[in-house]
Amino acid sequence: MNKRMIKVEEPVIRLNGVRSVGVIGDPGCEGLGTYNMKVYAGALEESSRDDITLIAGDLVPAGTDHYYQQIQEITEALAENDVYTLRGNHDTGAYSEYFGLKNYALLTDHFAVIVLDNAFRTFEEEGLSLLSKVLADTDVQQAVIAFHIPVPNHYILNCVSEEEFSRLKEAYGPWKEKVKYLICGHVHSRFEDEVDGIPLICTGGGGAMIEDVSKEIRACDVEHHIVHIYEENGALCCKVSDLPDNGYGRERKDAVLKQKLQETVQGELMAHLKYLMFADRAQRRGMDKISNLFRALAASEYYHARNFYSVLEHPSAFTETVQTYVPGEEFEYERLYQMMSEYALEHHSPLAQQAYQAAAAAEKEHAALLKKAAGMETYKEEAVYVCPICGYVMTSGALPERCPVCGGPKRQFEVFGNEEKHQTEA
Image 1 (spheres, one colour):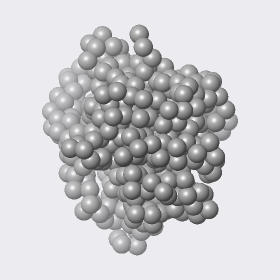
Image 2 (cartoon, helix red, strand yellow):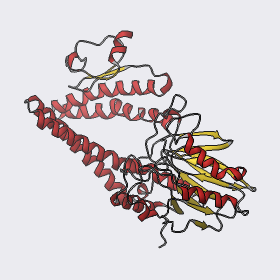
Image 3 (cartoon, helix red, strand yellow):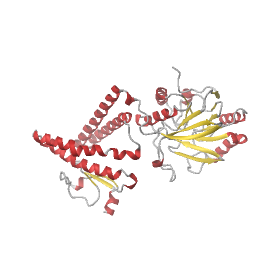
Image 4 (cartoon, helix red, strand yellow):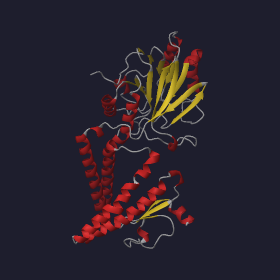
């Protein structure tokens, strides 16, 4: 079986039959956990539509053998085309041992991709010399210059210096008309700009969590994505493809693995609950160190559950997701919990009956709140209060002195959100 992740050993590589490249930015700088790697898996799946893939840096959180082996194994298992890389600021240490040269050019029949290393915010002389050499080739009429850290632009300051950009411009200057795109990563978002008359595409949505980078570029406006660069009718074109939340799903198609993953999620969540409950018992006895330990263990079990569940999850689009939770809440309080409460009563099990009744009251409030929140932009509640005794949920208006379901005191209510603003408005 041929390796998909290419170790570059020649500065110029000729590729026949290649008309497109998928560019994935920053898959691994925040860690190679399953939760992030599911995004990367979806990016590789989308990039399989192209002839080759280029990762625009930050494959790993740190440049050690351990992480490089991990990303290589994941990529080999998932990639459906050849994957080339460029070095990001996180890709230090053993990068060359795994991926070879840091400056190189891919020459296709229709365009060239020149990969330059600027992981330490400077362009290397050998890279700039290679850039000039490739652009001077009369067979090269269209080119993309790819690097990790952006050049100066109109949106962000997290970029190389003007002096470094001048060195780059000097290298491509005589053949500037051949340079159709500059493409980079590093910023965990996406924006498009024009610098020195050339389109600049910044893409960092291949695994790292999308973040706010400026007033103009907010996380809520950007999805995880990849960039397609392709030749069409003799011209070099660019298209951004957002990654659907329900994209990658290989494990869901294996019935045995799917069942075992579901069981594992349930087991991890049960451990999470057991550890939290023991932490409460320890805290009531003044054993704060033991309580802290078990809260930490509970958090760890939650993250395990999240990772396993992320492999299984098949969510709707984010803006449509909230309303999908309503039917489950309605079913619980209208039918399931009522039925179980009656069963418990008939079988002389008062504690189970009480638990189902209290939960049903809370689930009814859950459904009402979710219906309000379905229109995310118009949702107004500043604070949500939860009774830690029975789980009842309260929001707007004056809070009762005691929980209306179990009588728990107001002073114990847990607050989620901006309580001060809520009280001011109330």
